[in-house]
Length: 94
Image 1 (cartoon, rainbow, N blue to C red):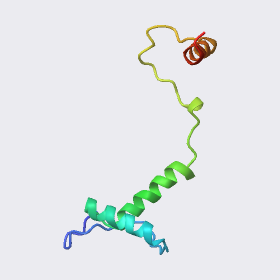
Image 2 (spheres, helix red, strand yellow; image 1 turned 180 degrees about the vertical axis):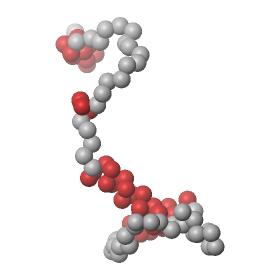
Image 3 (cartoon, rainbow, N blue to C red; image 1 turned 90 degrees about the vertical axis):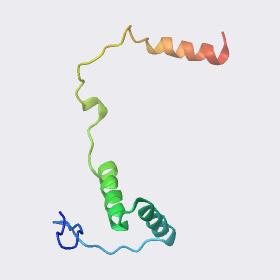
């Protein structure tokens, strides 16, 4: 949402926190924010959201994802033994 008078963004349902960080981390975020023309706080919010998504949320296992219909292989997929034989032949030249 934009504050019409000042043109600043304000967020609903956000918590304010205070975090102590190392100087190199702060400097890296400060430089990135300056380069992108964005506030440091916005970069930190994005970093926290990324961490939550990647490390804290439970993501489904790949085997549990649905298989969608679509293009099929042009020919059959080789067996594991055939693949191992090919790798062995390339490495050791039999």
